[in-house]
Image (tube, rainbow, N blue to C red):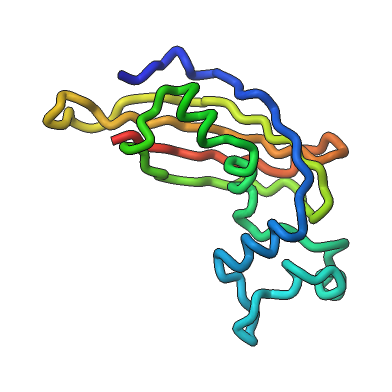
Length: 156
């Protein structure tokens, strides 16, 4: 049963330093390659990033999703919202880019439940598909909101 009373619930804020190694790992995992078929050097070499016009190594476009996982997010979400991990599917991710994030930045992740609802027809067990929508604000060390992530999860 979906617990709609959790709408509006705010998870504890979590702060972390963005590490160069994590940026390079992420770039390798999502194959952000350049025309030489190598990992684009702006994601692992500060000089290459500066030559490309950045002040340092930038995070790749969808890196903000990692704040969800690097901050204990999934375990915390499953426990808090009583979600069955064996029935969980990641459905959708939306990003709003409000500033650049670089290696060495100290990021605070603030996440809250913005919607929970049932969808579709009941399955053979009499259950609906449960949908949970989370919104994460990503704030840098200057207190500037640099991004938002809206994550939609489906519990079948």
